[in-house]
Length: 69
Image 1 (cartoon, rainbow, N blue to C red):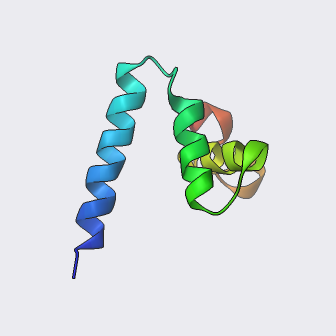
Image 2: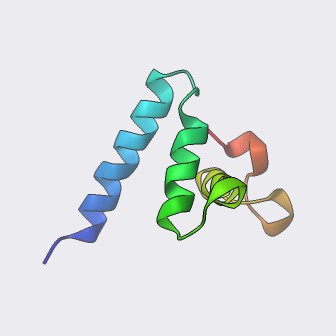
């Protein structure tokens, strides 16, 4: 059985490092990938993935666009 906390931590570091290294150019692609993993496609996948990275909308208690990568 895998230790999912380690898997999530390593994955998060890899995604964050990739976004930092590319100056944020890869963020939409990363958001789409995450949204696709949630079972969504197209604009819905991108929006959901970016919301997850940014912590959600300000109105819902998240960081909004300011907290995104």
